[in-house]
Length: 324
Ligand SMILES: [Zn+2]
Image 1: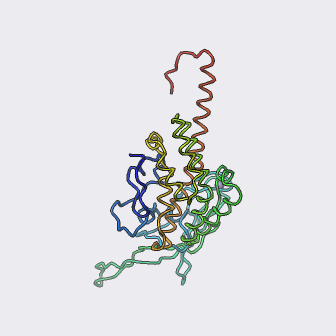
Image 2: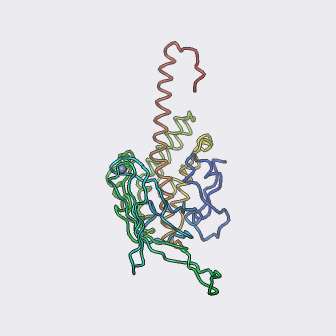
């Protein structure tokens, strides 16, 4: 994929190449190339609409299209007690008589001490006719559900490494973005996460410059990337300019995150629904985290590797091993 591609303005602008380039497939699974031009990246993004996603991650009140929904069993979910993702079993799924909601309760299968309760209601049904003994009968199948409660609340936990890199004020904004997202204030979620990207633009550019160094990119090119930090312009423009000077070797290796971030933060939101904003916020967060945490970790690994090889080459090297 060409590196110096024009970063097109907003909306349906990500090429399939840009998505495929990244190793973390989940970020890039956007469906439908040819959508209406009024729809932004959020509209293109296909949410993982599995019942498990609904139970574990879906925000409150946001309609969830899922024909024939039943609470999945088992599910994978983070357990505070166990300190990791574990398997949880459905211990009950109960609709109180005369009420229009259902309560699904899960228990951690490992420690058996932690529970997750999700209350949901059926917000849309589809009618179908069947032939019964007394003639035509009608059945109503679940078409859409809505989460109306969850305890413990949807997580706003931030991975420790990310929190450390973000610093206090950006962590605060980041949490506000998650809280907004989890309560279906998609517009708020986008605004807060964009503010985080804005505050961290120079650092993002530095991460990519370091990545370029770790990949032995010519010093002149690395300098060009760093020079963008000094540009007196908006953060979106900085991302756009920096994206065009990122060398193709990095893109082939799976990273022109700045171009993708630019696409996401420059997408217009006036026409988007709250739900589409939530999707846009989720994707911006994914790309941001990928760059900010993942790439940093990769740089560290490469630097450590280079350092250890340099140390070794100073000594007499043993016969090269066939092991990788
Ligand atoms: Zn547990």
